[in-house]
Image (cartoon, rainbow, N blue to C red; front, side, top):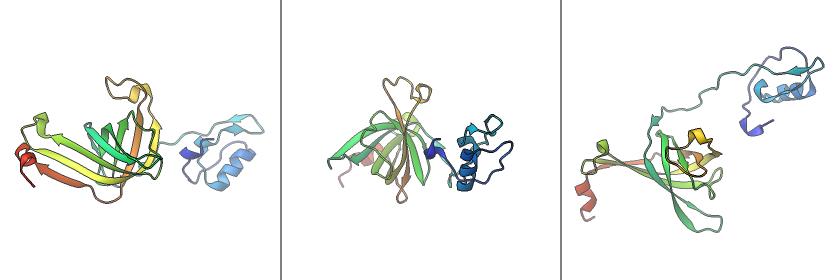
Length: 176
């Protein structure tokens, strides 16, 4: 039983009973996570469609990003990745550098999107502090095109609302 994937839910047990199913039902685990033997034989409960738990709509966006984190030894490192979706509340990105990431770890995320892919036009920059919710190994089919090696998916929730800046290339060269 994969405890990390379990969502508490009320469910109706159909068919025979087993200790595994009765114990799981008392704890509120859904049947798709509780496979076991009944007195009559194997029992698999029907799987329900996943429940959408996001509070905000996400923008499907695939652009390069840089995230900064602290290693286990305390040094600060910057790594690269590619966004998959972004919302005011969080971000999901793919990276080949997940060795320093873990749940509840703080990261700083920065991405820059040029308008219509033309560097001389306005750019949008998004940056913010986020907390890692999960890190998952991606199947080969979920990896970005042209990617070699192992890729990881990282879900992070912004600690505060991310900062968004709109600028032009000329603004980047003005003294501050």
